[in-house]
Image (cartoon, rainbow, N blue to C red; front, side, top):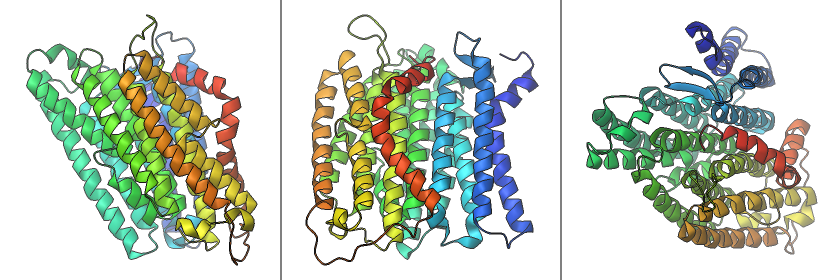
Length: 495
């Protein structure tokens, strides 16, 4: 850990600074040279993301000799760069890089605003990285607000119809309600502890249990809006159905990463086992969210909203990992946080994969109704295969990586005496399996007189990256042990 404060702050903020600095450069290039090709800004964004990954690698080098898993801690522990923060930062950068490479079709419709699109992508990634390192209430709220503004702006920027603008406004309203709940909750907790450090709450529970319970409930409910689960999850379906798929995938994946990181920081790292309120509240929220999203997936009639419901159901499944962070039934530490981080990575990649393939279908002129993709395999076998694998991964169809991640989450919850929640999660998984199998059977059903099409309208790089993301659902089955090893290292400071 660097002893000099300035040196420590520089290293702590270097990954975020690389992203924000690149965003500023992209905007300046657009202002000074407005006639440049739009894809120039995409490659500028990719360079910034690679730079942020390199900065994360520099921090990881410092972690090698730190047995505590904490590389940098500043502001009296309010900003902590540890193995958990590095896992989230690297995952966020990977998601942003994949999104930039498959977003060509999304930005074609806004050539004059391409720099703004990629600048917002970079800033939102930096906000997600900052959220993962926050233990201080004020800066956590600011990072959440920046993330919401960027997500809403991205959706509004690439709108292709009036409904897109309306959905972005509704996303802003719903996200604003969630942020307000977080703010009121944190204010109550600050009034109880007289400290903005979340870890100080455990010592003040006995002094004002009512205020603490209300503050914790508001904070958890508000953060669930960022994660995309009940009670504030309607924006997920609106974004999935009204925003072009290339941008919608990034919005949903990055929001889920940031929301999951914020919940882990606030509950496991901040409140800890000493604040019992959240340990019974989160399972209830998870149970309701799982049931709501899983049942909703059965009645969806459009491909984009079906994928959105599956993403929300998988995000709700992540909550099982949060409650399973303590000692298990066999007297050894449970692996809930390992399952949480591993599943977060699998779900984020599967989300990008599903929307990446959907983006290719949109460019090819295929409609969004499920009936529009009936018999897709007879018109384009590669497209049907990639879409089937991506949807099946999100739904938890065995033996894909999504199934293994759900199995780990459910078993970790059962190991920590949440057997009722594990049973409910199994039931919810059966519902999402039903929705996925029904959808895949539609893809391979008999078709009528539809004209065959190709995916050639989508640039080659976008097709390769989207295809690789889809096949990751299969590849991660083989690489599940290395993934869990990395997740275990990332969860080391939270378990």
